[in-house]
Length: 171
Image (tube, rainbow, N blue to C red):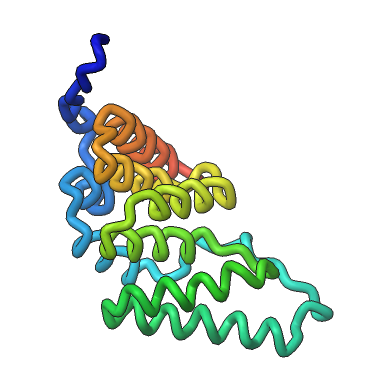
């Protein structure tokens, strides 16, 4: 009001029980999030990568190789290399993977870069609008940016989407 910054209190976590991913995100436990993303691999990308035969070129092989190198670096916790490799994959633009955006988002968080982490989490949501992981990653990035109310809202939205998903169907 008078130019005095208002310190935002961290709102409480959602009333419903959280999944392991929701729990890790509510605690901002980047190590646990990393483990979950490694374990889920690319399971949630089904249906988002449709390629025609004509698109299978050397450029495509190079792009998939960049993703594979990024995956190895991600698994080995070499987050700067993972960012570089995933960026090569994304910049080609032939295939879009919400998982790559979520993984790169976490890499940015682990490299103390919450702004690009938030952008990647938002990109994952653009690719797959009802994917809880995209919202969870936004929640953590927003919390790192001291936007605690927005972070809690995203956490609640993610938990709600996950609950719907468990009741039936993808989403």
